[in-house]
Image (cartoon, rainbow, N blue to C red; front, side, top):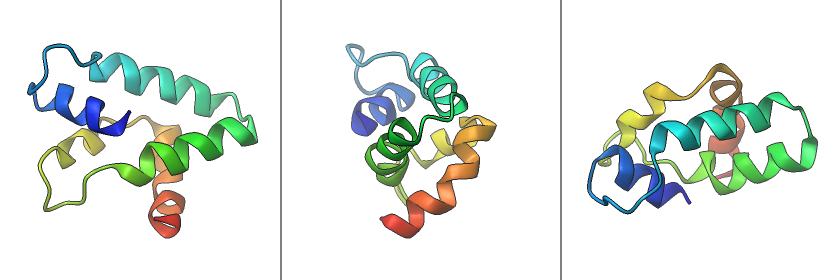
Length: 78
């Protein structure tokens, strides 16, 4: 899912789901505080975001507060 969000952010794939809507959905799910859901988002999405030197890293600037809180954990597990 992360590559599709990044492609949408970069406007490289018109078929990719809207990156803003996806980030909003993930933020709402993180806000629920369900440990299993949080773990999946941290490892399968946040942990796969592009590094600073990679195309699409700017999408990180648009993460919500719940996602931002989890980024250090995603980086540690990645």
